[in-house]
Image (cartoon, rainbow, N blue to C red; front, side, top):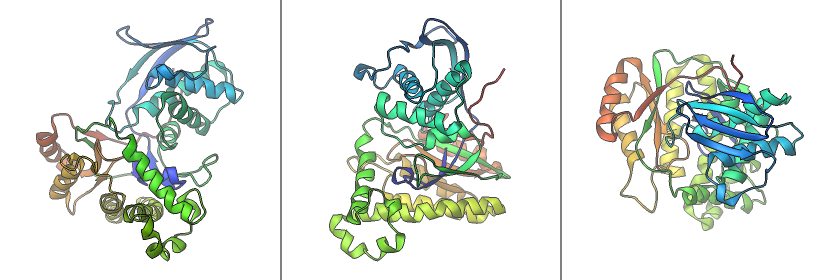
Length: 362
């Protein structure tokens, strides 16, 4: 779950992210067939594939089998052993609500292969295997944040200035008297790829003006002193770059406030992030469908109830899907009732930070 750093990772920025108390698990046993087979508890098939065949299969894109094949391919390409296994899978992560169910699955497969076949592999490498599988085999462009948060556990700052060796800084923090709530507004993530890619391409366009590939390589002072000239690239591109520079610094401010136990300052930084996503990043609704604004509506309703008592902001990629709110425990029932009356029963997912990442249990 992203706490801070909205759309910063793909520009090699910083993210404040946490593992949460939902999980994908598997009871597994190695086999000698070289075939990886996963089933749900009711016996229905999730994937079945021969791990001797690791080429990308276009017809497999978008499937669980593609993720398994991709993780196994990364292991082989990097000199680690793999082999067949039989798995019974279960998950408490709802699909399609921005809680990184695919990243959790990828990290699970990496952890299975690590423990069954003795790979001396770090959480970062497991995360990279998952990202590779999702990018190349599954067909979805994504950064490393979701996989890294799942693999490491706890609350961490991930600094992707060097994407091959991101700096991971644990943040020991508690949220006394508050619950983290992800609200599913019911908007579909289908066909949002072009909207996500527009953010990346516009930020890259600003970086290229300065002869760089990523905004992280541009000094903020150089950017702000050039805004007048940059407008010829489009005001929205300038605003999205402005969001990056301010959001990248805000990650440290959020973490520092949490370390001090200063919840008032932390909440103000969360809401600054939300306002920046709304006004600068502009990812609370699709430009092509302005009549559908579930995220903006959920944020406005959250402000009505939580003003002065909590915080709220867009969650994840945006345009549709979910918002993130920090809700006082004594308002949980009222907040949930108000949001569920609008977006349907079960839309509020109250979560906590999970201290452990991917691991083997007995």
